[in-house]
Length: 239
Image 1 (cartoon, rainbow, N blue to C red):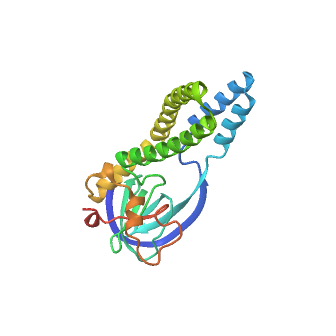
Image 2 (image 1 turned 30 degrees about the vertical axis):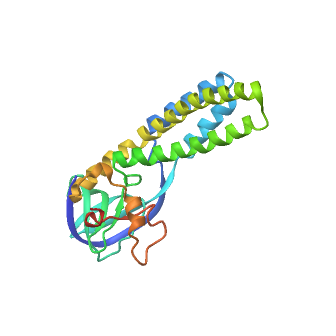
Image 3 (image 1 turned 90 degrees about the vertical axis):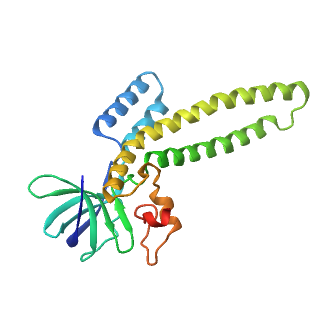
């Protein structure tokens, strides 16, 4: 990937639906697993896997434009730029002077659009998912403990406390497994994000969280989904 600078002309933006997380091979594995579950009599689990496989598409912007005469095209979550904007583009050559776009940044106000999900460095992604998983675990564990221990006394209470502790131990590992699966699934996007950040010349790329930085520094006249689908990042403000 390389960093290109210039002026956007002939911008065309289309809001489309596409599966940006799961590959065709992963869909095949999931559908094969669903078929196996159905044969083993686990109809509900099989239906759940089929629903996940069939509803994994999401909306993103497909953009096409020229940057000082160079044809550009690619996916971003939300396109906040317009014709005539002076921008920096992280792109990869596709031959015949065409480029695949991975990110677009407007230096004037530090607004940046990226390939979907490519908005965290690896360490920032790890912390974000871990925080969510631990939050869910603590809340659910507390509610379950209160419900199970309510009204118990004496030996019955002591026995149930032991059960709650053991259940909590195994539940924690279950939640950690879900966290690890989620992290591994999105880590590829974080590695792409780090390459994008390096092209812009930013430092500590593994710790960058574009959503968090955007919420701290919100410019005027922002579009819908600011901080979720497009962002603002100025390295000078993060020091």
